Image (cartoon, rainbow, N blue to C red; front, side, top):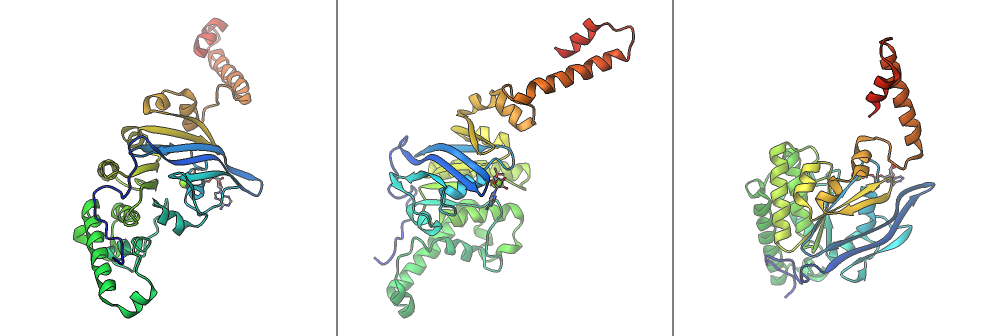
Length: 307
Ligand SMILES: Nc1ncnc2c1ncn2[C@@H]1O[C@H](COP(=O)(O)OP(=O)(O)O)[C@@H](O)[C@H]1O
Ligand SMILES: [Mg+2]
């Protein structure tokens, strides 16, 4: 065998459900004076779909970059299946962690199929001489890769467009193609950075189904997304990042019900925020002023508005 031609339905060597496969501990990333990610712990178990949410600039993408070898964390450690992940993105992919990007990165002038084939290169093992001599081993490997790539296009619903140029695909389909390309490396863990950004509601629902189908193939998923309906429908567990730190982590109901999460999203002052008292005073003053416009209203009525 000159290549891994795995076409099994489950990820090769998938661990038993519930085993921790990704273990990020104390991950900190500083850019000069800015701490974009600060001491974040996060685990993903096999068979799990974990969500990572937080306002813009919270450090979500930076955290992904630390998990995938694009950045070397200033502090902390990331283990995948008990091994510290190498600090090179292609090695991380080879180790079994694949990703998509917030800003789509496809080869626009290549066909849809070729883009998926690019994603397979970490899994094809034919060496230099095999490629140069183009012997039977090379051709077998190439054929197997094409078959697997077509299978993945079928899986994401793009088989009919295999020969189209990637740049001619509508936006939603480009995102699907990115997922197919990531799956081509046969990962055990897939990281998705805002997979439904720019999608219409139908496409978003379809992506939800696709993520469930990926999980059902034995691939764990860690997903960043702003669409809360998508996140809370999909995820077994959700972690919230705010200003580089993990604010809370739990199941959908716990996270949805946490008023700090609501505050982080709506931009309201946090309960223990030193600015909160001041903001309350301003609000009270405004309410008093509003009620003061009607000279017959007494202070008691003004107080009523504060409640
Ligand atoms: N390469 C970089 N150099 C300097 N600052 C960065 C870099 N990447 C991200 N940042 C900063 O880190 C913070 C977190 O950004 P990011 O991880 O993209 O947030 P999110 O994905 O949650 O919106 C932001 O303040 C951003 O400007
Ligand atoms: Mg981001």
